[in-house]
Image 1 (cartoon, rainbow, N blue to C red):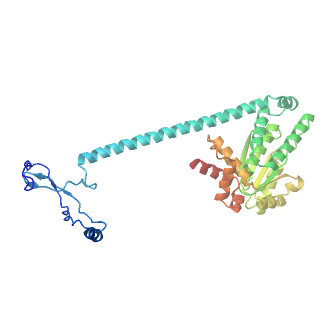
Image 2 (image 1 turned 90 degrees about the vertical axis):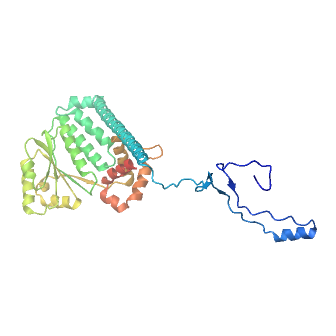
Length: 362
């Protein structure tokens, strides 16, 4: 029992006791105005009080204070194994979800490409059934209407390449007019010059396909070769030849070989592809070009807007679509902010694929 309160009941030794170290309250001052003012001025504004300690008394003994367990304590092996199993299950679920999303993306991309290919095939078939192409089929005997419709549709979808479209229109008009009156087709060589990435190979391939569709060349295939291997790769069944590798046309023996091949195959269409200086050197060094003037095609560099349009077309062909807030102007801005204009003028259309891949990755 407490000494001050004899009537209070006794506490058991196993009960929780609150031990306070609080300072005793000061004695009350006398009831006078002077003492009140002295108390007010003498007592500080804040007196820190030590915290109350909690302890557990068990049968007279004392244990450690009631504190929370440490966070950095080592978990038990069973708990570690449970955490590892949960982590592995989460990783397997994440990997399975990633594979599922990738499979869905591939299926969607393949479906988009298949739909685009079927749409192009249907468009070419509808174009070939039009009255204009039916009239061409009736008036021109050696004309492949389906191949001509396919080449015309591809020319319409090309970005830029205005000189190529003008040359193809001129070749088409001349060949159809000669075929309508029964005249022999006029086969000329073509010299294509331009910087890197301006579409020289694309232009050469389209010209060969157009001449084969018009019946100007009679060969069944088109081959690609270099100036050194020109003699070995030219055969009778080859109607059109794309000649690349004009890096060293200054060798006199090479020029004589090219001149002999051009004389021996007058009905073949040879398309020479190279830089402006290489094409000029070949044109001035081969004697066949002085006897029969070839067609010339100089391709300019692409503008940034045209490269952005090409990247957008490649994204659509790959099965992707641009976000609603991203347009071709955004692609052009990304192109100009990533590469300087001198690099754009040097790489041209090669940057369209790079820009499309960066758009897919982002």
